[in-house]
Length: 532
Image (tube, rainbow, N blue to C red; front, top):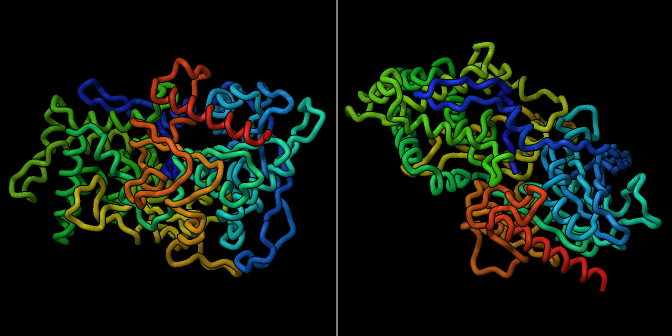
């Protein structure tokens, strides 16, 4: 759930001298390294109903129309009678999931069971849009229940051209097993809850099954497991900035912004979000963060986070950088802001160049202003717009600072509900048929069970250092004890780390290998049960 929404453009990061250990990379190259493969799978389409619920008033006026929903499949390991593994695409294009067929979890399960692997692109993502634009009215069919109904319809009606089989392999006659990670993991769980008799089983990885309006816990694993010297410095710097903001002294606040090179940002929220980019959020960030770390270096794109921390803790930086630590000391009774120089140096060398127009306060590509209602109201189809709509309508999880201003935080306490909610208001004005609630309608998401979700043949697997853990089964916010589904916790694991593979389970790190072997055993039991 919640991949970085790249509203801020992609640009080469500045290469620094050894005294400035700033990451020298290119974000699009990092994403390509993580998501692309050498394989190209042909896109097929199914005529998917836009509206699966013609009697529910929330979708009125109803339509009998269909849209072309894309899917991709791999039959490299398939033998007649084998199972079908349906990878739920989630909030991205189908192409960005190809690695899961080639070397990831679906490849692992296909090889172990002679199965067929499929990626189903989510409605309103990639090229699977029901309409030519995404107005508020046109987005009314982008809901959790419509999305999981797509899974049911697809399993019953999908065809696989060129597949060498003499009989249809649709569910339930053939064992179909779902897999999804993050939001798609939750959709996997919700599909098993709602359409259980159709499927042989389903694995939800880092499945964010609980919706909360605010989610300050996103930063908890970073505080707990990030480099301690870096984290302590960041918390101290954030607390000092918060104290200056609390005075209401506009000149002092402007001075703090200027130190980061962001004096032209008029919105305190925009300033707070921009300096939070290296950490992550709220919602948007142009460089990689803790969430993008991965167990296998070829897949990991979170190195930017550690290079950022290296700058914050670099005591050997040039004097021109270290001297910034005392530049604001007059606001804290002479106490230095240790690490501020490295923090601001990183922002200036890595983030500011992304705004190639130099108009930092604008919504130009790569720039840092968000206070532009017209920009958000653009109805052009895009994954960013679809993702924001789901956040605003049902899912919430606004990445905010803790509500208590005295609670240690990695982000400024000015980041609260109104800052994110304003984007919802601007992006989705009332339509003729569809009006968003004043805050997300969490019931439409949590009605499937939330932390307490239960369904036969459902398995949930999480990682304990995942930023989204507290919306998943193993959350510290969840009630205890619970009678829940089959579950597994990867100690030291991040965000759906089990979805990645290297085409050799035995060569994987112990903690990933054992998770994959558990999934293989689980799936084989489901297949055997289906045959009985």
